[in-house]
Length: 459
Image (cartoon, rainbow, N blue to C red; front, side):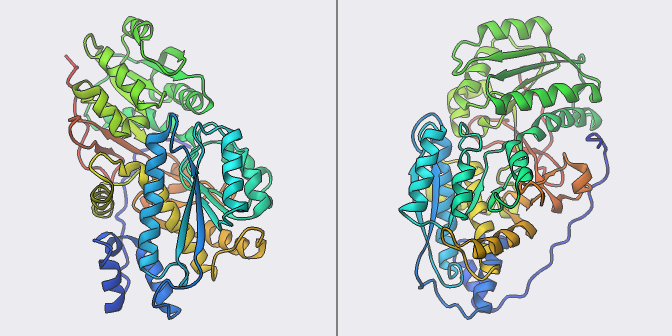
């Protein structure tokens, strides 16, 4: 597979589905999101076809176990917001075949197995949830998979972990109900090298040299991304001049900065993803910068990065393999999300569980209903529908590798996307031109809002 191929993107035609006046009024009541979102239209039409007039049946319990306190609370609370928003909309359209969804939440604090597993067990045993719709629990590995497998309920998560591929493919029958509705992290490294190589191809940037500095933390997720970038550099004619592992949290970046300035790289790739530490990096970098593109991993999507870093973060780039697009559908969602949860909220994060809930609700509706814990027959039907869906949500297209039950990335996986954005979830690159405003999507096409801008620290 050649990740540097430059084929033209084919036009994507959207088929318009005829709706009754009643359907249009129902979806329009959602404030503009429903009329644009495929998921809302599918739920409304499925309920309408079954003669459902309202969500007035027995409630379906839906769970989430995330870090609402602890180091990941900024993300955890957005995961809760996204699920609540989706449930509110789905219930307004009749729920799942007339049954409203009822959310239950458990705090996993620092997200280790000793916290996640009991939280999941409470959701399943005490609340009887039919599904757990999560963002990530970064410190759990895959320990929670066995809890899910024992109960047979559906589990949609965004752990963004290669272990999803490894575990699901090792025993697909046991783990039939575990889905990761974003791509695994090993796509990040090749993706960032492809991105900076593409900037040169579009004459948006000229590398001053071939050197790249890579900074990571001693965490499996970050190291895999860093190694993936390092191993892909030669394909684009780059060389790895620095590979530095730091401990977190990081308040003093001085020793690392000295090494970075010594190699004077064309690109700095930092796969450490906590926003407060990333902001400190920029505060200590910009007083004496190198002429380097600075790339951060995921965390810069949170408002805390811009709030702490201030003007020092202007010009930085970050990526995420799942996040709300800035097209008509994505902005309708983001505007409604901010109106509901405040201007300081982060719809780029809440969108993960928002789309995850729609994915499960559509699959359950197509299967004739959701299954409670230990109703393996019904939950197998739901999983089968989910595995075959190609769903266009606010994060772009979610389509699962059938053997891994994880999302296919676009455009990094050229082999499976064939340069067709309708077949994979976009690997998004965003730049922060102004810390007082939301970041701007600069890749990939056809989702790009504006082109890469030269960072202000360049001389």
